[in-house]
Length: 455
Image (tube, rainbow, N blue to C red; front, side, top):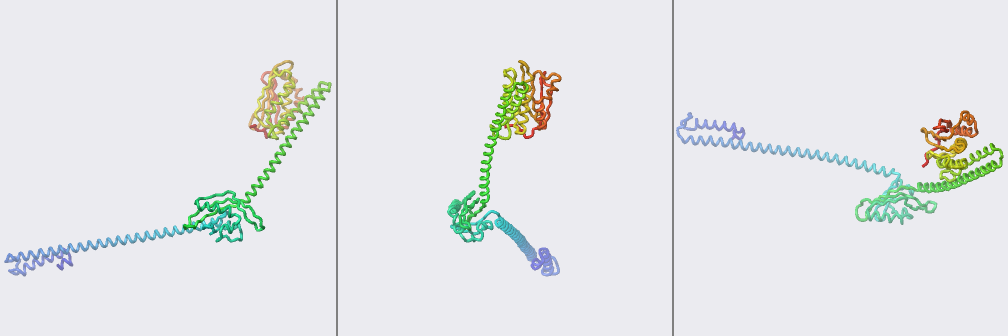
């Protein structure tokens, strides 16, 4: 039993075997012999051997149970240690997370506080049933410099604005909704005494409180008084400018109307003089001068009836001028047809006048010289954009053309000399081209300048 208890199963079995042999040799008759004489001794020896083996097995089982229990306890202890270590690590991680969250919260609080304190918008926090100022930023305090606000109610700080502000604050508190107000007029007594109307873009926002009457309202306001004043001044200036523009328009219309009337008077005087002159060449010269004056008068008539007093629609002008010249030169309108190919181009006055005089000279020459007798034909007047930035003015007829030698003499005539001078004034070029058939084709090209397509 001692060997099994202290030595284990194998020492216990060995000791049991030795005890069996020792009892067989020394304790049974005959002694000093391993063969007992009495058979009952075999029962005692077997009992000894059985008892020793059972004892060894029991002690071995108890030892294993104790070992297993110790191992389980050790494993449980290790598990508890691991769990405790994990709990410690989790606690440390949680503490670090809490510290990080606390730092971030503090950083955000400081950032928000810095934004509020340095914001150009006026920000104030109101609390309680009487809307007491709990905090204001410097921009809000600057509205009333030198006057304390924190701890005082809206009615005490803005007594003139209380009848307007209090209903809005009550709506925000009861409905728990944001209320914006644009260009709200909030009166305020100035240090000199009179009430000054100040304009604000205001937003009232409800904030959660501690319950009961502990209501918080965030007020954000931007003063737009100077912008409102500037807008009013701009509106007044615009009204003055519109009035001045109307007066200028009326004056310019009157100027164009009077110029047109004066040119009409000059034309009438030239017509009267032409009727009184007996020399044919002098009468024709006066009539040509009369037509040139009328071509300029027609421009001022167009300007007078136009919305734009600095430019005319040259298509409409060409139509009227050619019709006037047609009725003046041709007694039978159906004998000579007119074909217009004019783009809807608007011209400024400084370009329209030279173009009008050129048109008058070229069309007049076509009516006078291209169709002698009762000859029939057609006159084409074209104004198109020939190349980017350039206009092409064409007067073409299918009449008799210019015989040899006549073209050279015509280049020295007053009409074509006027056309040449006006072409240079337009920074353009004037040339005679071969026409279809036996007619004449005269082409003027000049830069677009301020001309543009009419609407």
